[in-house]
Amino acid sequence: MKKNILLTGGAGFIGSNLLRMMVNKYPNYKFVNLDKLTYAGNLENLTGLEDKPNYTFVKGDICDSNLLNSLFEKHKINAVMHLAAESHVDRSISNPMSFIETNIVGTVSLLNAAKHAWDGAYEDKIFYHISTDEVYGSLGDTGFFTETTSYDPRSPYSASKASSDHLVRAYYHTYGMPVKLSNCSNNYGPYQFPEKLLPLMINNIKNNKELPVYGDGKYTRDWLWVDDHSKAIDVVFHKGRVGETYNIGGNNEWKNIDLVELLCDTMDKLLGRQVGSSRSLIRFVKDRPGHDRRYAIDATKIKNELGWEPMVQMDKGLSETAQWYLDNEAWMDRILSGAYKEYYSNQYE
Ligand code: NAD
Ligand code: TYD
Image (cartoon, rainbow, N blue to C red):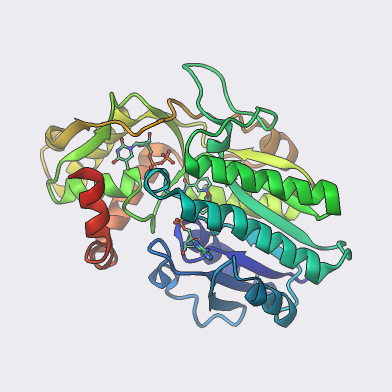
């Protein structure tokens, strides 16, 4: 069945990696990438895709209902992959309102446009909402998030994503909208904006700048190679059951301080420095307010039902990630020269 897919947020980190895979893998599908190009959206992330006959870029806001209605009609959209979001916890703490607008109002605008365009003819339609494990809140030293774990979001970011998840499910139950959801752990890989832990640390190590580790550094995250996430999205999109949620994780928990130390040693090797020397740049700094202690995903459901498992090991993925940022200095430099400077000094100096 031919799919005409409206993919939102395709100029961001996960969206651009996902599009690169999907546009090449499915030449018969049409991909319309709707992205507002906020500070986090970057068309350079999509270099090479512009000329593909099955790919179109549209600059616009998911809150713009008129635009959404016209895109559904013009491109005969029969599937949505919804990734557009404000995505950084620290920014949500200083400016929650843009998270409410994009993550909540934007998601409802998209649901309404799909409902209007599909008008109850839901066979062969899919509304796939991509979400985060942060909606489940914070774990202690043990336990895992499953698909039935109660929601307990604690930051404006995770609360806004939780709201969007609830609304997507509400449209399934109330209107019969054929939805699918997935909640994924922390991704890493190329094209991630350097406000997030790994690219920020990579850039600072390279430039011999201090490495700001929040609090005691023992906060734990489960890390997943971004292409493994894209493969999971592909599988859920094609084979996942309508109305269901799938947790996606790397089975790969790291305390922040251990991860930053491993990254230091990885970078030292790549940069020809004495291994261990970059660890001296580590500084414990003021903690993030409401900082979730630990996230960990139980991904049994997607493994048993859909046969997906993470493939890339951390040492390989981390080394490839660090090498990518070293090889793509111009990409990083263009980001660092803009409004990022102001963000960095407000956040860290
Ligand atoms: P990102 O911040 O790198 O990219 C977000 C993209 O959305 C950007 O291109 C931005 O321009 C676009 N956007 C923002 N507001 C918009 C609006 N109003 N209209 C249209 N486009 C808009 O985010 P990411 O890390 O690629 O995350 C993508 C999705 O995956 C998000 O929904 C996020 O919650 C989810 N997620 C991310 C992670 C992670 O580790 N990064 C993990 C799990 C889930
Ligand atoms: P982040 O990449 O912002 O992802 P999230 O908060 O969505 O998990 O942060 C990952 C972890 O790293 C989180 O525990 C916060 C911590 N962190 C630091 O210690 N220092 C930093 O400068 C940043 C950006 C994050």
